[in-house]
Length: 344
Image 1: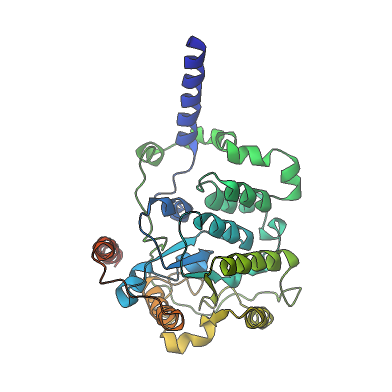
Image 2: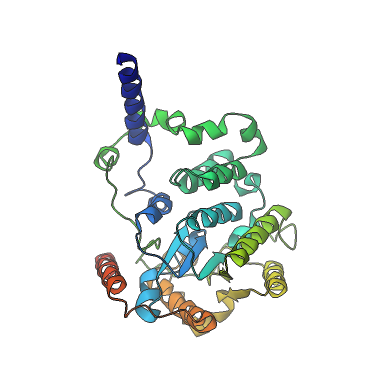
């Protein structure tokens, strides 16, 4: 009995220390908290968004609800790759089956883990996507797909199984946030949308070298095909989108490749860059960082535009007359407006 009590005590101590040293993503780098917030949701969604920062800072679920009565969630994360998007979708389908899945195609430019940046940069983004996922076969496969060949031969997986092996050195930099949010973390997003209210005008971006290949790599196409097949198998409409942001550059050859793929598969592809006038984007007011991401005003405009297309094209029902759901979304809208006013 004493032996088992000792094992239990050791396990609890490791669990406590691991929870303490892992990043909390509350006041600094809040985008790291987005993936885990999905599990707090108790109601279903007719639309799920997946992708990188061009989804979690472009589409506002509260606006989509208020304008069209469409419940949605944005399962986005910083520099989310196409293979991570696929496994996040695979995992979400364990919990619910939406009518529409919207995937942001900018991630297609990253074909392999090695192409996503330096070791440190790649791991930091991987952690913000993978650490907060609940354990499942989907998470295991997402981790395996996200590691380089060298990492798979080493102990990379162990640091995801036991994050304390990766973050144990953080004890030197523990602060008030680490203790204050040890057992409870407040939501930083609005159904996965990360609100920004600042306005920094777009004045022309830095020049970018054109891509070495006119299209995308085999790995990117492989996971997009898996995404399309999974949605088709489950009776879900897959929609491909490109956010209106002028930076980073969305090359014409990339646009052509996605458009050809969508036509071949019978999918809807929407490039918001060519619909900016229709959306009403004003780049002097609707971006918070000079054109790389939209602020809340640009996001609301883009969401109204996209929501109208989705509602009409796929016959999505207006659920604002459903009492329980309407009451839940009224609470969400009140919190959203309060945050917006505070930001202004």
